Image 1 (cartoon, rainbow, N blue to C red):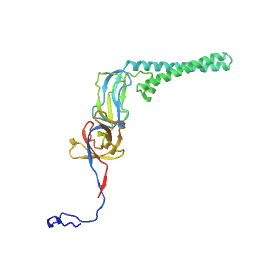
Image 2 (cartoon, helix red, strand yellow; image 1 turned 60 degrees about the vertical axis):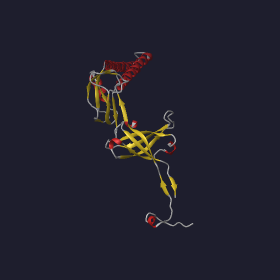
Image 3 (cartoon, rainbow, N blue to C red; image 1 turned 135 degrees about the vertical axis):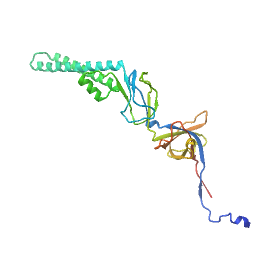
Image 4 (tube, helix red, strand yellow; image 1 turned 45 degrees about the vertical axis):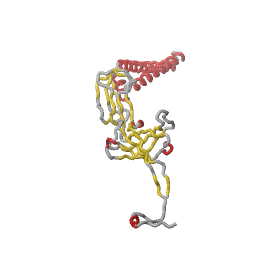
Length: 275
């Protein structure tokens, strides 16, 4: 067969050898920005008490060990008293056990009496260890324990400290509030990386795979696009929406992406080769 091209179309045609090219389609998935749960921490009090001072506000940057708030509690006082009693008893029972061993060497007391005093010492040491563990559980550090042991002075308050480095993105406490161990008072998050989470329709979920790069667009930030990597694809389908939850990790060094921002996830569909 012969194909004749009209003169007016000749300049619009490109003639050459056929080749294979990749064609790809982009799937747009409505998404939302979330904090990286591996880089965030909920921080509360280990003891029931009243907040008497605050050291941070929303948006503050903190490091692990920085003070967030100060709390006072009757339970803290009682636990410190129990610790001091246990420490005193260890000293007394230690001296009694040492004397018993000297008397036994002089054949002045029976072996049973030495064993009894040694047993009293071991019980006192166990009580001291339990009292120390209780104070550590309340958040008391090694330095504060040494000060308590050395001076025997009851500490009337305790500082609630950050457990990780990051920004204060949530604060649910004020001065004078009574808090319990179950209360989440602060949320500290490292926002240098965030998650973008979207629900991919099940009919195209087969084309979504781990470590696949996707393009993230946030309408609130204009035409700025971010590169992300898929780190999780759910193994289950939402019965109501018939979608598969997909999580993307995005670098956020300038903290432009903020938790709960709306976003669009552009996933490249499976590629097809054609002539």
